[in-house]
Length: 136
Image (cartoon, rainbow, N blue to C red; front, side, top):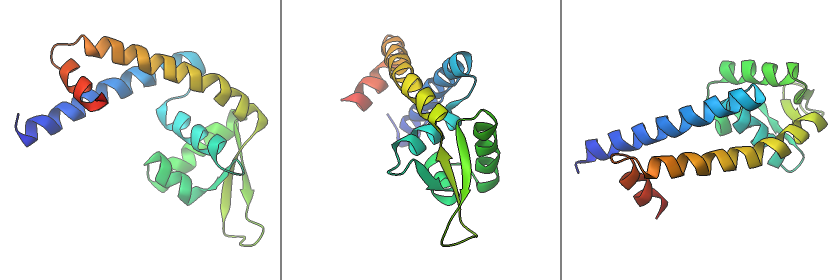
């Protein structure tokens, strides 16, 4: 398999897994992978908060996209924004109690769903062998 074919296969595998997870999270929690990734990062952060720039790096989106994502999480009551005490220009996104509760429910759902997706893909004649290699 050429380098290009390997990369194409990895992209296809990633896109399929991500799309299936996105649909499942949307159905169950009414948010997608980016919101889930942000919620996980916040819930797992030492103080339950991250600077917006840190969240941008974790989620892998640009700053304006993360601002919109955080606004959606805030509207849902899952996060809040706080100004940094020592640097008024700094803004933190903080997980709320409701956000921690959703995270506690969403994480096992995510893991079960991901395991099911892996099981399905392992039976796919094209992507199955690649997934098995990645998981080895």
